[in-house]
Image (cartoon, helix red, strand yellow):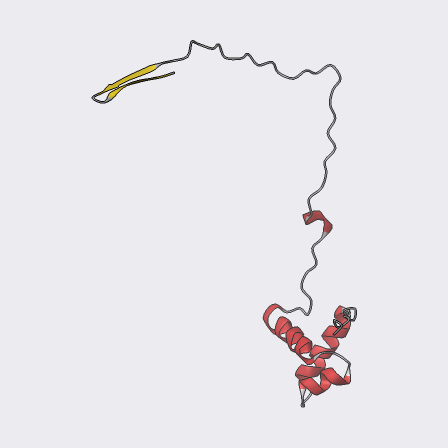
Length: 108
């Protein structure tokens, strides 16, 4: 059995969406029939109507390029050096001697 091939998703202009929403809200009759008449999935038309009623628009706003991360040019000056760090001085290792009833142990 072969998997179904997906058709490319249709894209509708905001003007087309707004016109269908206007027709659906102004005219009497079936919204599903109106959607089929214009070759649009009826659930999609209902979604556009809900968007219009809730948010006053038929399209979700697109992400603009200014909200995307961008690379910022950085210029390094010649002759600048990295800060120098001194290594901490090492003291002799500490030891711990533990005596118990059963014996004793030394940790270094």
